[in-house]
Image 1 (spheres, rainbow, N blue to C red):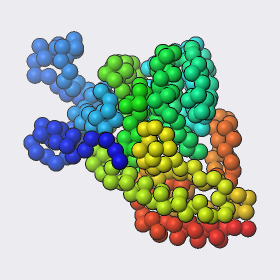
Image 2 (cartoon, rainbow, N blue to C red):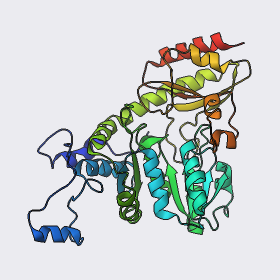
Image 3 (cartoon, one colour):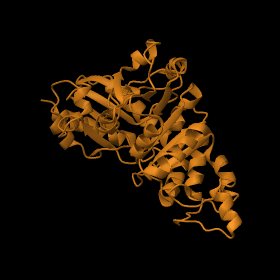
Length: 383
């Protein structure tokens, strides 16, 4: 199902350095001192790479970063305080006024707002394209500095052939960046398809427990060095040691959790196909595009006009109403709530999301219990 390296095996090398402790220790310190002037000078001049200050370097964070780099088949990783910190710090490390960014439609709403409210006013041009345009137009990325991707995309979950897009990008010299939070390294490893930089909202499946806000970026040593030199220290959105400890805990059970999320999602997709009120099921499965090895528990469903969305949302009992996803608990997010969000730069409005769409995060509760809750609420909400 997945060629992601076994986390227990990867952890063995980390634990060997910590006296046999079965989890990496939390090094809860802001700074690291030096025993001599010579050692201090060697570190400051770049001759050594020992830890100096937790804003840029910490052993607990470093252990998590090493695990993520191996999980995503990258050379190096850098952790951040949130998924948006990872996204913004990565983009700001590689973009400048006058550059063009080609972005997938239905991108994560806060990424869209970052493009429109921060980058565009600073003179960066952003254009949005469908997944098929990225795949089929070999000249789409001509003159583009960055191709910003999600596969599948947010809300409507359209996957893309990453190898093909990476080939187009290499031809035109564009850097490819992808948010891989939906699939996790268990179901998709974009670097093996030629993508340059992979990032995650580690708050989601990497954590898996809805108790951590964090982000992480995986790339080559060269791209990693640029992020560490520019945006990690100067923006300062660093990952804290305790959050890194929790994320390492999450990585230990990632594959097992993803398998259960997939099993529940498969059950829902199979049964939803015969529900007359369902217009469309947005949930790409294994091998729907090259490189996608499984289906996560995040999907969306578009109902017909016979379903009262508000009544449906109020009728569910196991599904809770809320944003985010990736934890134990199942969640429901009606698109009507997102469409009603006040203010400018509403990506759901921009990209024409149906008001009859509902996003489901299928958690780790019993699958039959979840289906019974969903079905009962749906019956009660049909007008």
